[in-house]
Length: 199
Image 1 (spheres, rainbow, N blue to C red):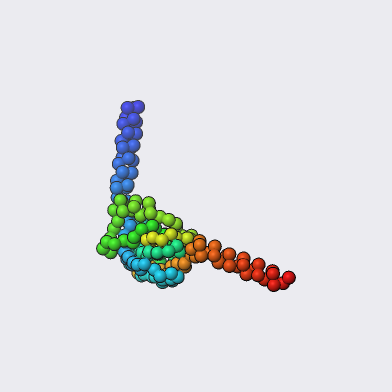
Image 2 (image 1 turned 60 degrees about the horizontal axis):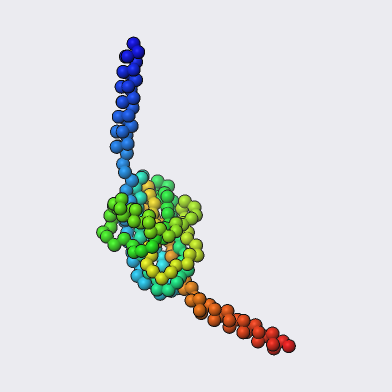
């Protein structure tokens, strides 16, 4: 009797393991797809660039990526924002994310699914991820050195007609340290002159 119970317990355990394994195999692997890539090139500061895209519907676990590349030749103060319009089942983006990466934007064909190595490369180049509400993300007052950067917008377009987002990136020139020092020295001289004039 005990032998029969033991055998049945083992069969049940094996069946449970087989079911768990088949469920794990059946679950689709999330895919990251670059759907669009724009390169603004070398920006003449100050600059404000608007961007936006209508994204086709993705599977619930799949993520779209939209790249906006740019480079700056001098130190700049960077801000960016993106928003999405939620129209329920018709037009919707979940997990809207705004990310600034070091390096060039995607240069391959679009749309294109990323390999695990390409996903890891992107993760290694993240400078900052935006913050905010589910439907709006911002990056505030970040000082960037001269170089090449990519602003990435990502999310899950789950509406029957996909999703839509729009945004703005701004880069303002930051005064060179020597120019800033000269400006402060000039203010100091003006203040000293005024003090002498009052006497």
